[in-house]
Image 1 (spheres, one colour):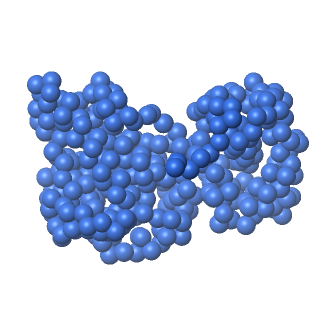
Image 2 (image 1 turned 30 degrees about the horizontal axis):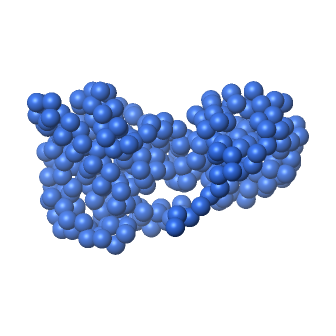
Image 3 (image 1 turned 180 degrees about the horizontal axis):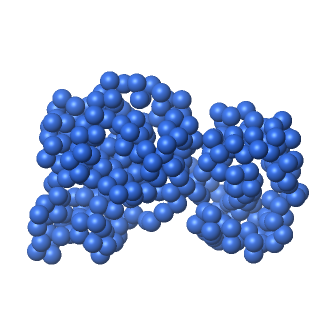
Length: 332
């Protein structure tokens, strides 16, 4: 039986958030059809009133119908909307069409539909109360804001895709591909999903960790910024939690609470994230040996750094290195 999928488009939707999802699902249909099977997906882009919406790039996007058609959808997806800074979230969530979208999602959830959102679309699910008590992800830049606004959600912005029962959430804009591939895997199996990945040249990236920049995540909390600045100046030295707390003019307990509220991590994990971020930058931009990079960020040897990069960021030092002599260039 064909699975009916509705993509809910709002003004300001990211162009790739719609197009990438459509391409992945269309490719899956084509692969299954060529092997003699019936197309597994019927996909429609739906707007509130059935009229075209304006994408983030200012293009007019025609749709297949209105949100009223969601009542017949097995899957409902909310692609991300373009946000440049976390403070844009407040304006987004106050929009009447976003509030109305939340009501549509609530009704779909009651019917048992599978719901998914990518990037800032996760906030639409969250505002509808559908993620309370569950794990979820969003764009890593928005993780702290999601945690602050919706403390009942277990936010893990390091993950590219989180599945919780009938709810899927994906990370940044292009993570809609991961979400769509998850639907393909669930509906027609991993073999077709792998074929789609090969056809569209999609790579797996289970973690957003390698792309996270800590100072952007923590920029709304002065005490956390102070602790981060002091830690960066003292990375090569042994650093204790009490020293970090003094640098932020807080008690260790208060610092731990502020870090948990802002980033969802402990002081030790905070220090480790700074060390690994700095190590990654050094490996990408310098020819220092692995052991020297490790010493500069406070680890005893390169082996320790290698293991931590693998475990926490899903990359090896070799993957971070550019070939010798290669520099960033703007194509002619």
